[in-house]
Amino acid sequence: MKIIVTGGAGFIGSNFIFYMLRNHPDYEIICIDSLTYAGNLSTLSSVINDPHFRFYKADIRDREAIDRIFAENNPNIIVNFAAESHVDRSISNPGIFLETNIIGTSVLMDAARKYKVSRFHQVSTDEVYGDLPLDRPDMLFTESTPLHTSSPYSASKASADLLVLAYHRTYNLPVTISRCSNNYGPYQFPEKLIPLMIINALNNKKLPVYGQGLNVRDWLYVEDHCKAIDLIIHNGKIGEVYNIGGHNEMHNIDIVKLILKKLKKSESLIEFVTDRKGHDLRYAINPEKIHNELGWLPETSFAIGINKTIDWYLSNCGWWQEIVSGEYQNYYKKMYGDNK
Ligand code: NAD
Ligand code: DAU
Image (cartoon, rainbow, N blue to C red; front, side):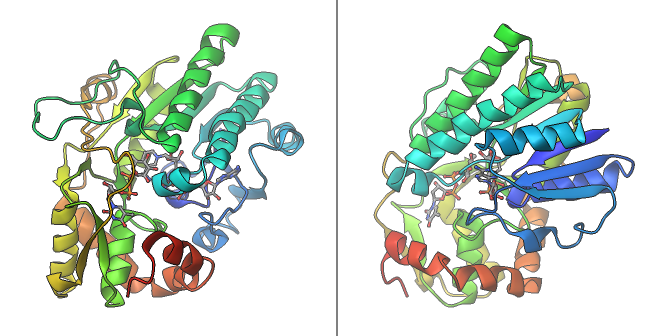
């Protein structure tokens, strides 16, 4: 079995590659990544010389390069993680989100049609459903919740989902889509809430919390997401969408306080800052479909997952220090000003 994994030098893609090489030692994994600011080849250093792994630096928008890689490898399955993934960046610069997340997905699907792959899996997000009210804990996203996006990022992901379903209906491309809630774990780029707060706390810098920190996200340990995708690409029904979530809703402020407590830092480091434009209030997934059809359940509790994640950032300072010392500084200043 040959699987092309796009975006494999990023957070979830790299964790998925490790998961697949561990759990399917006879598979060949071919990674395509253009190594944007969010992609890091050092993340893949433990597998780069694995005879079952191959890396291509290529952009999913580059039709010729993608065609060449498909021709050389004749893959069975494509799992598309490659994307611009950060909501805040999509607010300041939407164009690249449309190009990578929509056009890039269509380029990959054209190659998937031409080389007759047996599965094209699109890694999507719960953000395509928009948000839920804070005071209606009974309301959850199901696969039939209407798409109702808030940010250029989520609109680009929803557009890609529609395109994926259209390629299935029009060309009979064998597709599946998964829509997952917020992931956390090793190798997450420090622009996202959990790693940003861990690293700022370690550096005794202010922890910038948007608004009052009352927005709710449904957190899932990244390995549980990888396991769900593995199940879907093997046993999921063609043409179907699967929601993935941890039944683990938390207010942002509670996560930030928990991180400070675990790192033995003072809550005085918290700084409430201007809210994100169009900030979604609450995400919450109903994962019944993937549970009933494929037997998937999240295995890592938040209590265990957050300890593992904090320990990982403590033991892998070299990985994130290299990131935060480079171009990241310009991004940080633009986003948060001279936050000390
Ligand atoms: P990430 O930003 O950490 O990684 C994205 C990767 O894609 C990077 O390695 C980057 O170099 C690569 N990439 C970007 N543009 C590319 C292009 N044009 N060509 C080739 N490679 C390109 O993202 P992530 O958090 O790992 O998310 C992966 C996928 O999962 C995304 O599609 C995202 O929408 C989705 N998702 C993320 C979460 C989450 O909580 N992080 C939750 C649900 C879904
Ligand atoms: O739900 C899935 C989505 O989760 C994925 O599709 C996205 O790719 C991923 O980035 C994530 O989106 P969010 O916007 O929810 O994640 P982020 O880590 O950026 O923010 C989580 C919450 O924390 C959100 O309510 C905004 C808040 N926040 C974030 C940052 C970076 C802050 O309060 N301060 C911050 O500095």
